[in-house]
Length: 206
Image (cartoon, rainbow, N blue to C red; front, side, top):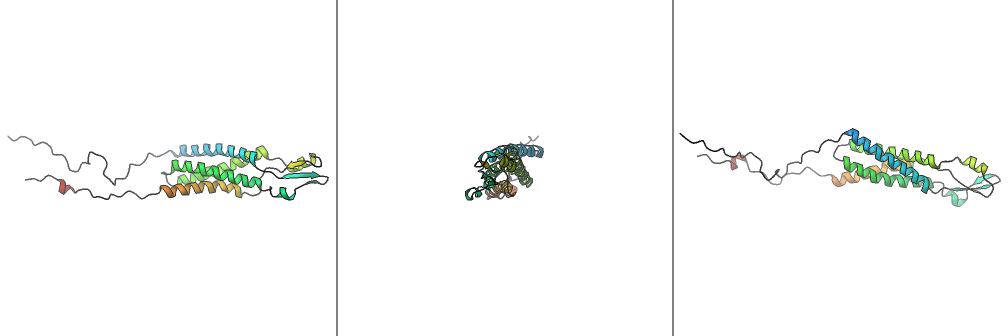
């Protein structure tokens, strides 16, 4: 009566040291889009409020000099008319560049929809910043000119003279997305050494 032979280890089992070189990493767990959108909205909402306050606080405003005929701007003050536009552009670009980059880095593995979410967040931030700034700092000029005395200086109202500065939020976010996408892009890893074939590693049968 023959004794049963012990089972031979299968040559097809992966090596115990780990995954063979060249095997792609396992996919990351999917992120719920509701959570991604909610986080993006909250981040840009808060950023828009802070940016609107900063726009109102730090924008250089032209000064009207009041005389008997109303108010007038001197040559020096004329150059400050578009000060709020420049301030809004700078604040929006920097804010969207930083926040857009951080959010896209977080969402970069989830396809082109991550770009759309960051862009919509930047548009939301621009709108909130404009609304907060106008709420805090926009005062119609005509009533203040009528109430002022000759020789008084009356600040111009805080406002945007064109909607181009609002696009700075989208430009900043798009630039951050482009930089991160360009620096993190890589091809799928390819194995440089071939695995031994099963026929070569199989035990010889006599």
